[in-house]
Image (cartoon, helix red, strand yellow):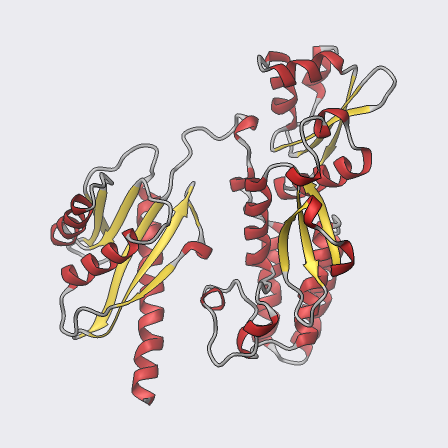
Length: 395
């Protein structure tokens, strides 16, 4: 294939289709930067990429507004054309599909191709080649359109689930959402996977105007936020290493904060950032059990100890609210467990308006990320503490 054609390719996100002499599609891929990704095949040294490049005579590209839309378009084209190099080393068992169940409150799940009994689902989308990419895509979609993963025996309970507290569950776990409204959410998710983002936005804009006319401004504002989220989807997490665009990506950073009043209703909060982006589905809350009197260092030790005992991915950096006392308390627990994880603290400056980081910051983690992690931990802890304090008051 003529390498000069690569220079004419757009640098936007989208999908690319390699075609052979007969015009048959032999491979479909997605990219955050089409020009750079296609150009990488000309320099490739791995066997598969070299074969694709040598067999290709023509290249077609389709631009998309976001990487997540490119991912969905890629799956659609693989399903339609079954390109040789896409399916050569895979069968249906290795491909993932997004499925939506036939239930009163449909669930959105991931299933392997061979395990899908299509009559059991109201809709399904795929195949998706890389599990990490579609899992991250679903996390993004769920932040815009919170959906349920609750089985029939898990709905209409007396208490909300954890995911409801971080705005990822619609609330069918405890009768918080009307069935009709939830089915609207499911319909929007289906439309998104069909590439109908503009149609969703138009529908939401009409809904927002109707709510405003009824003076239901709070609901109208919620719809407005969905529109904004759809228009400016933050999907950098989907940028593949193959695109060779993101360099020195920030690793996992965890932030911790304690909230209490004179030791009562004490809680701890953990927040998680990856690549500088909050991962709200990984946030965790801890009800302090070992202390009933003020003891910030003791409480942070309890939280860290309990966190380490969980089978969660370890961070590259821990951020705590406080200074040397809190830092040394965390390091002591880490040392007991044989873990070498750097720890930094965030304290208020003399003016109380500025914040200062105590400890060494390892590259490529940015100072603004550390401050954002700590601010999120503080917000998350305060919100949980207020709920717990209010609950105890009514008791």
